[in-house]
Each structure stands twice: as structure tokens, then as C-alpha cells.
Image 1 (cartoon, rainbow, N blue to C red):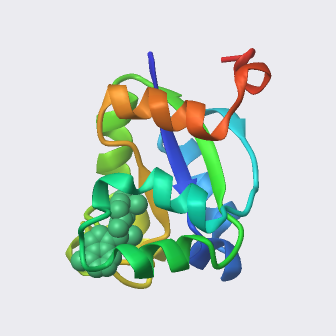
Image 2 (image 1 turned 180 degrees about the vertical axis):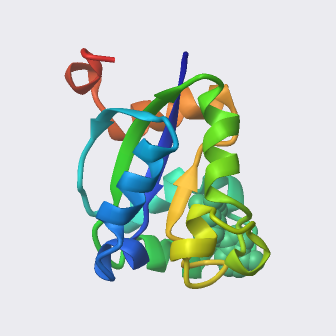
Length: 139
Ligand code: CMP
């Protein structure tokens, strides 16, 4: 078993799709090990997406990710990082496979409903970004 981080993004929270997305993830076999609702500020969102700092969409991405509540969650399954990325589908919902979270629930390439860690190393750092020591005691 391994862990990954997912974030239900502001577009999905605002449009009332968070519960459906969570159900979809559980039905796909993930166990939710930790979960919270929070609002990121500009510094936090900029730090979280620092790898994209030079990309033309960076400012818009930070603005979007701070526009409302997000739901970060720690998910457990066999090969959790690769499995979650398969379950959520391509970044652009227009290119995401049928039945994937982004095909079902995302609006656009930016407003794409959910984030997922892209490696075990990044999963560990992203989990620590959102969940402090005592919130990770049960993991
Ligand atoms: P995520 O998986 O959270 O990782 C980086 C995010 O940047 C991505 O989902 C999208 O929300 C956003 N993103 C990636 N590429 C683009 C793009 N070409 N235009 C706008 N937003 C993008």
C-alpha cells in the first residue's frame, strides 16, 4: 500500500461536485486516510505550484486555486500515485478518458476539478504541505 495527495479544486467545490468526486475515488478503491477543507492564500498556492512559476498560466492558476475552498486528501491504495493519476485522467478534460474524474467533472484545462501528486517523493512533500504531524498520526 502507498499514499498520494489529491486536492478537489475550487471549481468542483463551488459547483457542488466534491461529494460525487469523493464517492468516485472511494468506489475506485482508495481509502481516505486524511481530509480537510481549507482556503489557500496566494503565498501558499504559489509555493505549492512553484514548479510552474515560469509557465504562462502560473498567475491565473494561483488566482484560481485561491478563489475558494479546496479539499486536500490523503488517499491510500496499491501504487496510489499512478492509480490516482489514471483515475483522474488527463490534465485537459477534453483529452481525458471516459469515466475519469476530469472527464466527468472538470470544466477546462485550468479548472480541472482535481490535483494528484505525480511521484512518491512529491506525494510525501505535498501531504506534509497540507497535513501537520498530529493530522498524520493515523496514517
Ligand atoms: P494540476 O494537476 O493541479 O497541475 C498543475 C495545474 O496547472 C493543472 O492541474 C491545471 O490546473 C493547470 N494547468 C496546466 N496546464 C495548463 C494550461 N496549459 N493552461 C492553464 N492551466 C494549466
